[in-house]
Image (cartoon, rainbow, N blue to C red; front, top):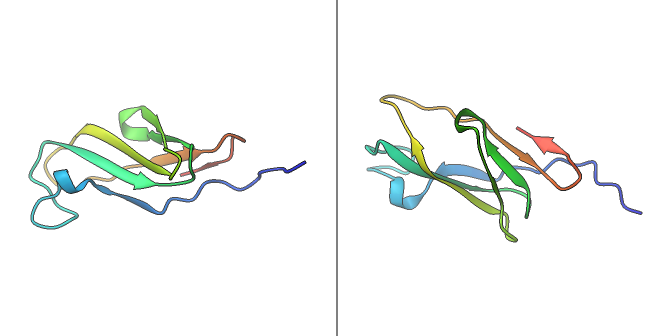
Length: 88
């Protein structure tokens, strides 16, 4: 019996290369793709958009077509594994 009590860790959350502007952290686009990595097969939620996706077997996930407003943006992302452990 193995009890999983460890929440998934986030390694990255960033603009996808196709959404980047002059630098990897800036864009001029009104809609972007955000991508990142976490525990494989974790359920990942982009809280502000109310959207969820499942990380693939390598832990990669993405949220396409995320709307932005002018100025800086902050995003809250939660990952939950199959055991229900979650990390924000």
